[in-house]
Amino acid sequence: MRSQHTCFQIAKHREQRMSFGKAGWLAALAAVAVSLTAAMPAQAQQKQTLLNVSYDPTRELYRAIDEAFIKQYKDTANVDLTIRQSHGGSGRQARSVIDGLEADVVTLALAYDIDAIADRGLIPENWQSRLPQNSSPYTSTIVFLVRKGNPKAIKDWDDLIKDGVQVITPNPKTSGGARWNYLAAWAYALEKNGGSEDKARAFVGDLLKHVPVLDTGARGATTTFVERGVGDVLLAWENEAFLAQEELGPDKFDIVVPSLSILAEPPVAIVDKIVDKKGTRAAAQAYLEFLYTPAAQEIIAKNYYRPIDKAVAAKYESKFPKVKLVTIDDKIFGGWRKAQKDHFSDGGTFDQIYLPQKK
Image 1 (cartoon, rainbow, N blue to C red):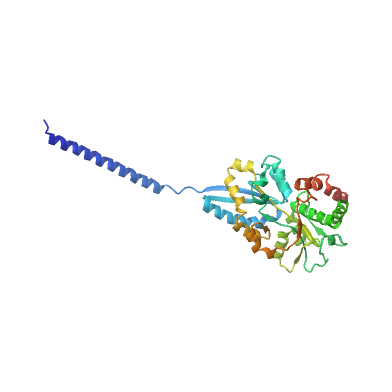
Image 2 (tube, one colour):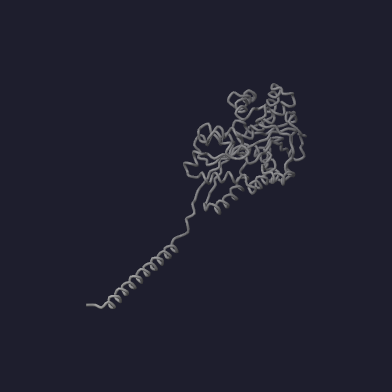
């Protein structure tokens, strides 16, 4: 029979052996865990692609915006982002999205073109309330670009209808910029003639007689004027006029600011049906919100668009000429839906005053 002391020693030995065994097992498990952790790569960086469908003259702007945003988004969201761009006349771009071009975001020349996309159920009707300033992160206006020395002495809208003056402007059926051009001319004629629509109609009709060709978009019209040498004056987005001077030199062109122009408010929107299908909503939302940041507003100003950030606008105030501006929401136009219906729909005022000239 074993003694009590012997039994105690055996029990203690077993306890120690079990204790050492448990400790060893835990140590081994920890070592394996460390080994596995070391062997595992860091969290894989997600890759995504956005398509920004934009209007004609924004190529340079969004090239700079994309570069800045891609870097920031990689740092903050650990996403390797690619942003593809599509550019063309704003109305034509909207039609492409409606017809199936899978844009994650649209950055077009005017609200009506995004409304047209919303009317097809791709974007909510309240899209304009989802971002500040009616979803317009910058503004612009319409100016005249003339050849150096202004040989035709063009100072205001009336000078565009003088004998021998050729005017270059795109087609308002396909170009957002052309619609802004047309409405600015209409507003000038109304103001000059005491609100007479008949006289405004006659003035714009006369102006169109001086247009030798209607390009489909603003950049095409700029190419016609700047590179092909056609025309005496280009009705241009302010940023396009400045860009032409910058790229070709101030010795080639002058900018003329008319007595009255129009406040152009190019808007932006997420295309909800597409981002939800592709899983890119977070990136698309961050991209558009980035446009309102001081960093992006600086890029906007440097590319000759008018920033909406007050501090940035004050910094670049001297860069942009002061001009009297009407807006699309003024009584004379009644908003984009009414202006589109009255002037640019099939059989509207533009068709009535332009199409007979082609016969």
